[in-house]
Image 1 (cartoon, one colour):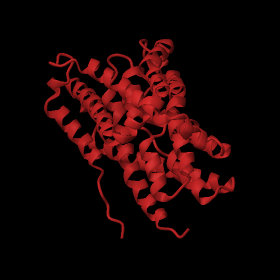
Image 2 (cartoon, one colour):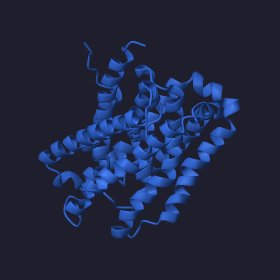
Image 3 (cartoon, helix red, strand yellow):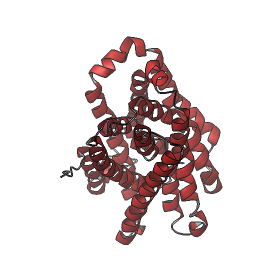
Image 4 (spheres, one colour):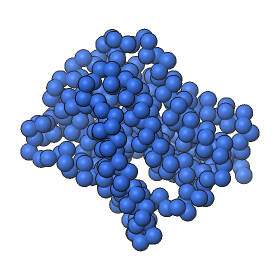
Length: 322
C-alpha cells in the first residue's frame, strides 16, 4: 500500500502565504528590505547553477528520440495553452478574466527539471530523454511563454512591452545559463557534489518571491474578491487539466508506438509545470501593479497536485516487472 506523503516544500509554500497574510508589511512596497533586488540576484544565480548542471554530454545523450521530444514540447507549449484558450470566450471582459489569465500563464510555462527527472527515474522511464527534455524546456520557455502572454497582456496592460521583456529574460536568465554552460567543465563537479544545498537555495528564492508577491496582493486587497467556492473550482480545474493532458499524452504515446519507458517520460515531462520558471517569469512579464498573487494561485495548486499525483503513479510504475 502506497503511503501518501506531503512534500515539505508544499508545506513551506503554504507557510510563506500565511506569513504574507499576517505580516504583509515586511514584503510590502515600503518594507524594510530591498526584496525585489534580492530576488533578482537570486534568480540569476538559480539559472547560473542551472547552466552548470546542464552539461553538453547530458543533452547529447537524450537527443536521439525525435518523436519523444516533439510530443513532450508540443504538450508543454501548445496543448496546454490551447486547452485553456478554448475557455477564453466565456470569460472575456468578465470578472473572471484575471483568473483565466492565471491559467494561461500556468499553461504556457516550461516543464520542471529536477522533479521530472526524479519521477522518471523512480518510474524506470527513459532517463536520458527526460534529462534532455526537462533541460531544453526551460530554454524554449524563455521564447515561447512571453509570446503566449503577450497576446493577451498587450490588450489590457499598457506597460507590457515584448522587447523589454526579452531583454530582461536574456540578462536575468539566458545570460547566466550561458555563463554556467561555459564554466560547466570547471565547476560542474562542485554543483553535482553540492546539489542538495543548491536545491535549498532555489527553493529559498522561490519562497521569497512567493512571500513578496502575496504580501503585496494582501496589502492591496486583491483576494477580497476571491471566494472559497472559487478556490474550490480552481482546484477542480487544476486537477482536471492535469489528468486530461496526462491521459492525452499517454494515448498519443501509444499511437506513436512508444515503449513503456518512452511513454512514462512523455507523460511525466509533458504534464509538469515549473514553479521556478513561474515565479521568475511573473516577476519579469507582468506589468507594475498587476495582481501577481492571483497569477500564482493556479500555479501553486498545480505544483502541489502534480507532485502528489505523479509521486503515486511513479511509485506504482517503478514496481512493475521488467
